[in-house]
Structures are given as C-alpha cells and as structure tokens.
Length: 255
Ligand SMILES: O=P(O)(O)OC[C@H]1O[C@@H](O)[C@H](O)[C@@H]1O
Image (cartoon, rainbow, N blue to C red; front, side, top):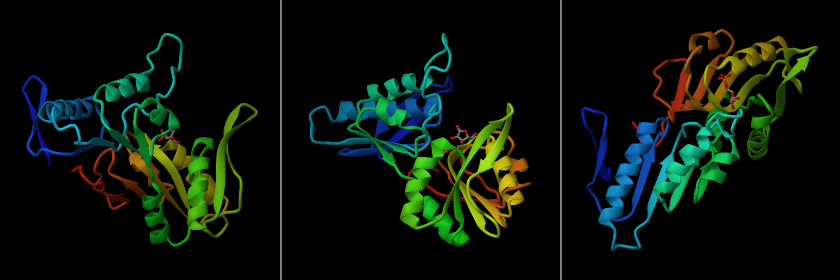
C-alpha cells in the first residue's frame, strides 16, 4: 500500500502517503466514505508531488456508488450520479478506471475515464460451467453480452420483460431446451429479476441456470435466489460473500 488511512472517532478520514512516485489507488467506491478516503490520499499525494510533475495518479473504482442513478428520474429530485462524478473529477486523477459500469453515462461524466471489462470473469464462469447458453436479461445488458458471446463463440438468447395486457411477462427469444444457461448482468440488488427469469428458463426446458453479475450486492432476497438459480458467479466489487452457492472472483487491491 502506498498510503495509509486513519479514521478519527468522529468519523473524519485522513490519509498519509508512505511511498512516493506514481500512485494507483484501488477502491470499491461503493460508499461516500470510500470516495473520501481516495480524495484524502490524492490530496496528500498532490502535496508530496507538487514539484514531481511527471508522477502519475490513477484511480480504480470497482463498484461505483450511484451508477444506476444516471439521470434525474423526476422533477425536483437530485441527479446523484452527476454529483458523485463531479466529486471524482474534483480529485483530478490522470486516469480513472471503472469496472463494468451500469451505463456509459458514468464514463461520460468522469474525466479521463476508462472501462474495465467484465469479459475475463464471464469467460471463467463459462469455462467452469462448460459451454452454457448466454442469456441477457434485458435490453440494457444485451449489447455487452452480445460482444462477449461473439468473443466466446457462445450462443446468446436475449430475454426481456414485456407487458401483456398490462401484466409483466418474461419473453425468452430462443431455444434453451436441455441446455445449461448463464444469465449475465451488471448487478444484483435483490435479484428478483434473475429469480423469475431462471424460473421461466427452466419452464422452457433449461437443465440448469447459473447467474453471473459483476456487482453482487444482494441487499435483500439472497436466500430466495437459491430456489431457481443453481450457482452464482460474481466479483467481490461490492462485498465479500462466504457461501458455497457463490463463486467470487477476487479483485486486486481490495480486501
Ligand atoms: O432485480 P434486482 O437485483 O433488484 O435489479 C437488478 C437489475 O436492475 C438493473 O438496474 C440491473 O442492471 C439489473 O438488470
């Protein structure tokens, strides 16, 4: 570690640089406190490197807080992602890497940003399962999953939530009979989307249904998922999960 974080009893965070030169700060970034820790480290680094103009400062954010709030949803409400990205921009990093952002809006709002792809994690899950059909759960996930399917030479079945006579229904646009399926998406908040999709896939003959999400939040409904999903693959971008139902790919630089 190139810096240390100290926390005061009142909640204040402070940083101390312990190694000079280039810095690469890697954080979950899934809390306001985490972002403030990075800001404190960058402020301390800036002061140390005031005359070393060639040193580079990079930030990796694995699970950007507020990434789904990528617009002002209703009049009078705050545009949270814009606020968060403005704060990140105020740190003035030379490069900011974001792992599998929910939408391209985060990348557009953050200066000098670059996406880290989730491809290698999906590839790992794909190989462990043994050639499953890839399933994109909604229009938002279709484009990136299509790119991954091309690279893996895998079959892709798009699915969507549609309204039939006003009631939500899952439509699966392909044949999954007798095949294992791997649903791929960016994040699971509760996972209801995936629980019902897995049920629908099994009703159409899928033999097993696996789930890959980069950001495994599971803020609620985790146990319910086990009813229809056979196994979950994810990273530890949001939190560490210790459960034999889950295989977690560990990211560098976070504990
Ligand atoms: O079903 P839960 O986990 O609540 O929500 C996850 C879904 O909601 C979307 O924003 C995500 O991209 C994902 O498709």
